[in-house]
Image (cartoon, rainbow, N blue to C red):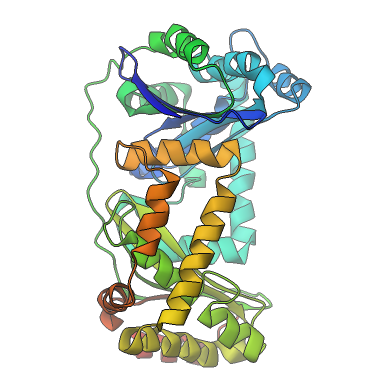
Length: 421
């Protein structure tokens, strides 16, 4: 059963009670991420995520770790370009203790200077890890190419320079400006007592202070860029991203885009996986994925290949995209894709953690709750014509973005740049 409650200070509580489960997951979602940072603040949202686990007025970082382990639960956080999330998953009988722990680190984190200096080194190592992971790195480079000078282009982890220069007062100012009650959603899914939960939430999060900052967040839609970016690096493979414009998270055609992505490269039965890996053995890893934001989105194909196969594989990628824009897909392929989408969706929502994620995203994107039955109807309603027209609208040649990383020769860089210019 779904319920929504808005506390007096503006924090939204969305819950779904599922009595058949033995677990419960609580997530605190802040509607702020890396796109809301100024260039000098790059990485602040992610750094705050780290710091909230480094001690409160009554618990040390070690106390926090030991307490969640003693409950047999899981507590973590993650930062995206638009949100910062803190969550805990436990057995239903441990919900009161888990709520006390999660609310303590969110509401009463010390943000100590000494801990900040130590955590800076941890985040700097995290940034360096991305530089050493070519799959992550080429996707970061690709986002920078596609988004141009838009704030969405900046890496979630920030830059070494902004992390090193960060001060405690900088972080407190950022928190005051962005962690406003009206930008916070608390989502709870699993087995719990609704009355007791709402009473506890009003007592804890109901006291969350309003911001003293007069700054108002400004977001504007990205203007997606095409073009070519090639970076030579001594690696065993060349890592490639080919990108196109997608749709925003709440777009009316999003289910057609989900189907289009599934057919192109979103699964092991997809056209790209079958053509490039299964039939020709040219790559171990090839897939496509969607990135949907509140006001824009992208479709990206990633592949890791030997340098001598770059032109051949790119030709295969373009061939499959041209087929979709010229012929679409037939009824049998669409039915198989829709069955796959429905099966994946139903299986993904069998856990309290997944249900919590869906609750929060529904609220942040649309302000309403979408039932599983509604989702099934949306998927069933996707037509061949809708997917065909969506492919024609999104897969436009003059907006293709190509990013390459690896042992590319100067000749390949020139030829690829010329072919995409």
